[in-house]
Image 1 (cartoon, protein in one colour):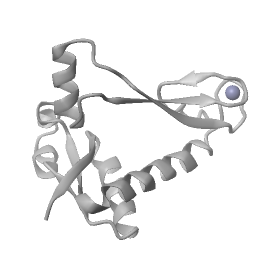
Image 2 (cartoon, protein in one colour; image 1 turned 180 degrees about the vertical axis):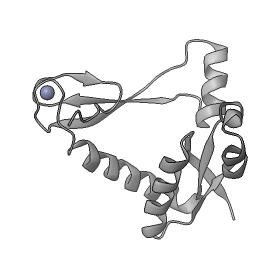
Image 3 (cartoon, rainbow, N blue to C red; image 1 turned 120 degrees about the vertical axis):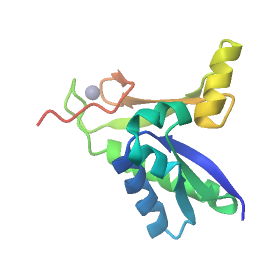
Length: 136
Ligand SMILES: [Zn+2]
């Protein structure tokens, strides 16, 4: 059995939410380092958070499910500038500028060129680094 890491979390709730969602879709997955973090949250940054491990042959499918879920989620969030629910997920690959940055991203994300995600409003063009929080 070969498992690959497709994401890491430092939030226990979020990690379990995502895990449950994937398992519902029949994905063979589990969280690694979960116990360490539950016992001592301060250790979390040191070991790179909880790692979402997915059975290798299902990794692509799992990523699709996550991307789809996120797309659906952001489409329910109103833009904090124009109020329209027109947010979309955008991505670009960030080439690390130096060795340390490359090493860090490899340790944290398990990849050398991290994909930077951002959100943008298709109505007014506002760009968000984080999903804008609903102020209601
Ligand atoms: Zn907008």
